[in-house]
Image (cartoon, rainbow, N blue to C red; front, top):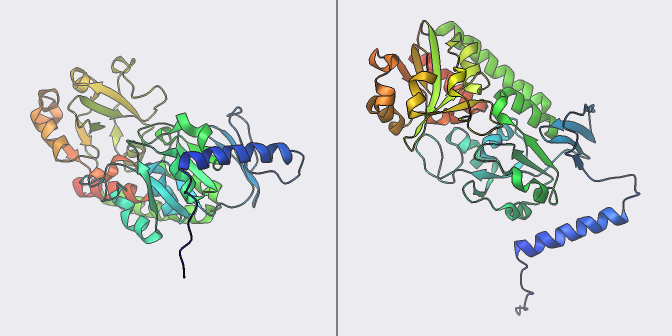
Length: 349
């Protein structure tokens, strides 16, 4: 068979411009038709919208309302964190953003979180891009009918949501102020996987109840925090942090973060789950008689033991510091289970 010359393959930028133009033309021509495409209203975040049992359905997101005409069959997650919830409910995710690859206790060779790396491989999830250099146009390659976006944090691409909406409907979720269960239920609502979500959550609740019967939390109050890898301080976890919610469920009494260390040091104006503490505010902000260092790698342990901002605290000098695995940095069904198991191991009855 003789080879035929092929037309030059268009770049993703050209394809995106073509798609935007086609979308605008379709909206003009079909504006009066009854069968409208999936739409999103980002101007009415407080609107109450009923969700039907089937499709189409309209749901409330953290960036307005989202209407989906049919159950999504090809989902792209621009958030590494949210991908764990998709996999837990066996949603048809085809590609996900990734963090830096090969970080011990955090990521695999692709940059997918270790706690669900095996599930992503089994499901054939492709790497979309690395969070450090997001490539929105890469979503086009996977022909999604739903795109997930984190409202904030390091894996957020909120500044490019408008561009993403020219590709597919966008589900925006603020996981910084919600439990992993709430996030899972929201993802399930948008993907028609509600029954699976409830199954997963029920399984975890059974495990949590068994753990609570086997654990003896420390006396007094406990501060939970994450040590910054650059040595600049720590992030104290608030009662909105999923890790703290799990610890509270297990019977821990969590210390309150004093208002005096908050001010303008919160990590992002819209973050609800943590407060950034500079080195001089470490002991002022972490007032618990016991400390739990979340997502602790070797560097975090060395920092707590060797940096005077941490090492001179009573919790350290009295040997009341415990550590959870690196995978517990962001919680989903998989890492929440790891967190529970770690706490039971550290605080056996």
